[in-house]
Image (tube, rainbow, N blue to C red; front, side):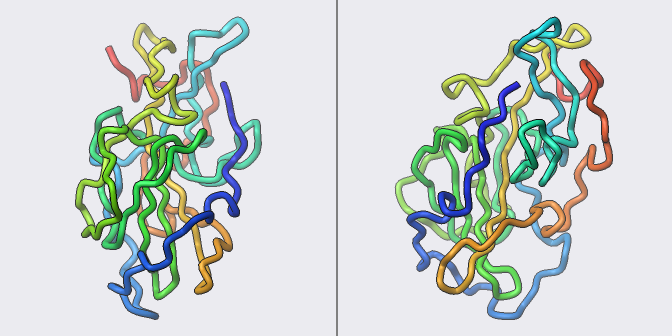
Length: 226
């Protein structure tokens, strides 16, 4: 298992185009919790599997969905985002209206999109990471909630040079780690990223394995290929 350093607030907030913040919600107007679209066009689940790369259990996988939650207790420290399960090629949807920007490739996030939007008048950016390169677009564009904005991929630290890992076997099946890494950045009106939030809680989603505290080798039959 490999857990690179989390992307810092300063790095995440570099080279932002603040003109991309639309005022579609207006200052002080809040959407109802639960009215935001889940961004993976599949059942809402946290990623559960983490492949084991060394020791006697190399070639198997650890079922530990708690590591995929925001601030999940990973061996390297708290997780900075939410890993939402979706097999490679699954559509990624705009969780709300706003403006999307295809960002430069990042060594950890790989291909990623920023969705600029406001929540109750406050500037937020939803980072969608590890995307498939087929969804690249040349310039920022406006989207409505539910629009297809990309596809789940395995770029950055989620795969092997962009290819999805398929080398962990449990219960006679391949345990897959494909996922959308989602981070929610909070900005002040000067455009400085001041912190992160739990995207799942903020947007009001119910996600499977929310309360699964397992940390067990080959501990599930979910999220597997034949």
